[in-house]
Image (tube, rainbow, N blue to C red):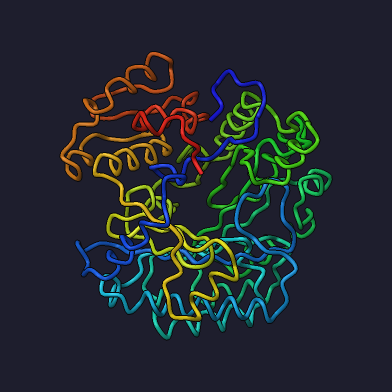
Length: 436
């Protein structure tokens, strides 16, 4: 990850989402997740479900996810059928059978790429083997240009409680330059429909540092986002993982990075936090502000950061279950074939050690800006102030965090670059390995 002194955003930067690094997850470990599914639940606790819909109208130039464009109705139906078979197979596993879902997340790709009819059919067929009727949160990612009033009503009808709208920017030129499929008029229409239909929570996404961004435009984007007044606003800093179109163009053409420097992006996010605070928002993590810290919870994220069992379904999706991390097959045809044959479509897995699990939860929860020692003493029997004494001391001396009683609190400076701080908590042999 780039350090604070980096002047450019280079290829290979990433957003920390797990530990140990994904590059260490191996095909030969697949039996570990299969065995975890076959074991009765080790403890009572929540269960989550991630459903990956990998289709998009266009591939954004900064996208590093497994997505597919220009898919016809038959290809989409084949995928949906495979997804239903995978979920049914999982629902029969001893570790899962009979358990209710606490939260569900439809991610992509673009889940809203599916038609209203396809979404209703997907829900109805999935409900033959599982149900999210009692879930506390059902999140659904939307691309503005794929929505209609009928589709937004369908989202509510199938049980969605939290809509996340990928706005990213309000300048059409910048949206086009970065390969986004939608334009600003579609944002305005989609948001109007979402408000008219009504959902318990609405989030919009912005990205600081898209190619072509300027100080003036960024300030305008933040102002417009605040005036929309969603419950949550998530702000990502543009990264350049290896497999993005921008990264490939840089490599093939020997081009300099077209993305703003880390210092500039951090300044933009800081300015956004300050502007949005002026209209009533509170900072809830390194990349999110909310209207109400007590009620505007993101249960999926909070659960993910605390190691709660999460079933990852769909091509290339990630999950962790009963102490084992895993990822599904990452090629569409391979995934569909495995599900059609009645096999769990798992590609690679890893069982972290107890110490690695501790590290994972510490670093992910640090992204929220504050951790307390007592939950880790209760769960792991470890004093994090002793275990991570050197990292805490170094980062406190550098002005990234403070230790107050039993709490570690990131300063604004630390929060704005939290991902760059987290490798210091990794086991030494993992600090220099490729992350993905």
